[in-house]
Image 1 (spheres, rainbow, N blue to C red):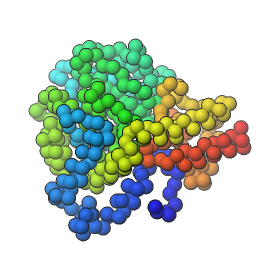
Image 2 (cartoon, rainbow, N blue to C red):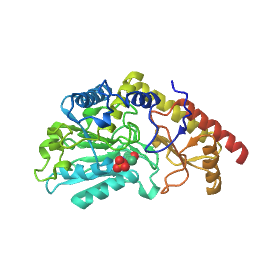
Image 3 (cartoon, rainbow, N blue to C red):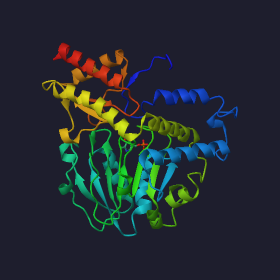
Length: 365
Ligand SMILES: *Cc1c(COP(=O)(O)O)cnc(C)c1O
């Protein structure tokens, strides 16, 4: 174990990585597997890098239980490029796609899809400032939709689906799981496509993981620019061009770390423990701390809350920083505070936050 002083890192993204993963990368930086080179310096066509890719894919399959009729892609352009690639590839000609809008990220995804064709809004919580997840019977679903799109965790507003929405028969379900990827078990077979930008829960920025059911590849039109074409990316094994080699190596190490902890059930247990103590502190503060999300929609990844006024919020963030707690200011569009408690955040950091919250309230309440 390293003795380096590490921050209590509550950053929303890019965000904390597991210490053992960073240490492994450090150890291998100058000489990766006897090559005398780092992963950044070897050919993406080398045997060594092919092994990195193959293991990352295999480990993710075991971790999430991904069946063989799903392809795994490691792409670039971040989660935001998936906002465009999904409708370009999967919305059938003249067809419409359904979007569930529960926060900034699903709203942005809808906006991109609207530029390229027909969409319908199955639900939006915008007038309630995105403080909740819809119930199934609130969704206005088009039985003819090309797909139903939702965001399992809204990173900015701190609302998270406990269960996926049910799509009409034959309508593939698509999820942006960027900020709660590999944070809990999920039933992959319920989905047509699952994707996540790595830099919240799974690695550094620069790679997005897209998991796609292979029958959907038949929809891909044949006039797409090659880098935006899922079918071409599958055919090229995510290596039509030079992939983001180091980022893929890092997500691969994170998958191994997650498997080593005991997999997603254990990770979920840890995440619930961390979020549980922070929400408990909010609930027991007598209204000093106010959670943004409705109780049944609370995110285990991003805890959003407000203090009595903006001045106390400012001093909360700056005092926390002095105690080595970083990244607690909320997103500028929501204000208040946001504690991101991703997979790699140790329980001790959540405990330190809770202790500070109680102390701060005693002094300012
Ligand atoms: C951060 C985030 C995005 C955008 O990710 P980029 O990789 O920066 O494009 C999209 N969706 C969700 C849920 C996010 O948290």
